[in-house]
Amino acid sequence: FRQEAGAWTLPRAKTPRLAPGPKNRAAMSGGHLSKDFFELIKSIGECKSKQEEDKILAAEVATLRQRFTEQLSPKKMKEAVVRMMYAEMLGHNADFGHIHAVNMSQQTNLIAKRVGYLASTVCLHSG
Image (tube, rainbow, N blue to C red; front, side):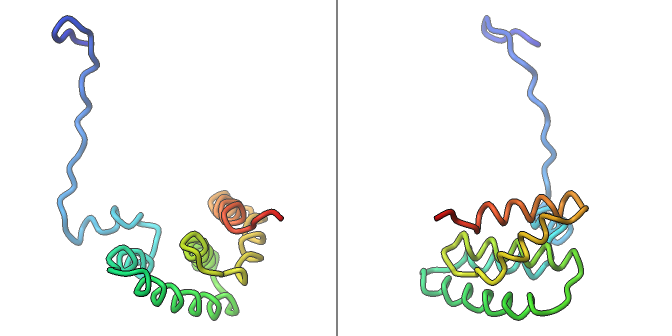
């Protein structure tokens, strides 16, 4: 604690500054997410109109529909479920992936289980 202008305050913590560039792209994209997923989010964020966003997401939903028919590694399945959840949150129907979210919630891996429960909560509506 230090006293400034008659009041006690905590010293400010120094936050590290990340230089922009390719070295920190993993930090910006989460590191655990693929570059392709980072590019999807970036392209949706840069859309100038709702129609442009809908076109990108319709292609993504079609890709996800195909991907869920394949045998995916746990890491790829986790990313596919996150992508499905993202499409659902933006108003696109991806109900074909809901069962994969429920199945993922039964995994022994804690991260996969959390993703499964989160996707189930976001995507499965009562009523």
